[in-house]
Amino acid sequence: GAGVSQSPSNKVTEKGKDVELRCDPISGHTALYWYRQRLGQGLEFLIYFQGNSAPDKSGLPSDRFSAERTGESVSTLTIQRTQQEDSAVYLCASSSTPNTEAFFGQGTRLTVV
Amino acid sequence: SQQGEEDPQALSIQEGENATMNCSYKTSINNLQWYRQNSGRGLVHLILIRSNEREKHSGRLRVTLDTSKKSSSLLITASRAADTASYFCATDLLRTSGTYKYIFGTGTRLKVLA
Image (cartoon, each protein chain N blue to C red):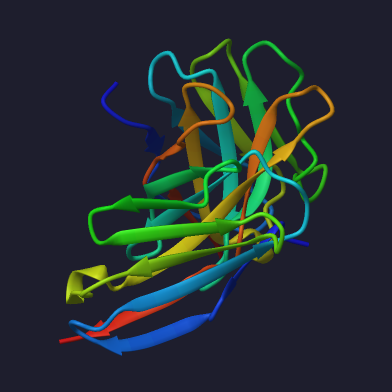
């Protein structure tokens, strides 16, 4: 596609429910990143996929968070049993190779009520 | 803790003035990037500077890198109201597998007053 696409744009969910966030990277980009940004804060690294290598999950804050990526295409970030502290904008980015410019999607704004 | 830290956290200037933001990091890097974020959503890439470069220009943007001090600065000359945004630096972090991931700083919120 023309850019990184994320869906949904906004998601309101009740505490305790599971949510799934989707990211469509730019076609051909081998590297894919997920970040979390709380209101007025910086970007917090969550997880990184690079080609067929094992993902770097070192940023996932708890075992309620998981992410998958099918080959070099779509990625989904799943948050189970959501908590109010999970409310944030979740940003996805992709790059053609690991050490180059990253292109960001517009993010998913998650609100847990 | 974050690899990159921007300074100042917030900056307010008049249109036409120059804006300077700084970024410090902790470990050796291969390159450093600056991004802009409007309205708390997607980030836009501004400039990438490699560790063997000391200065880079792009339009009204000037980036410097001092690897001995582990710091970088972003200068926006002749600022405009449209430059109002948050600016982040991102440094690459070498993984044990030999590939890289990017760690972002906390950002500088720039406000340009018309």
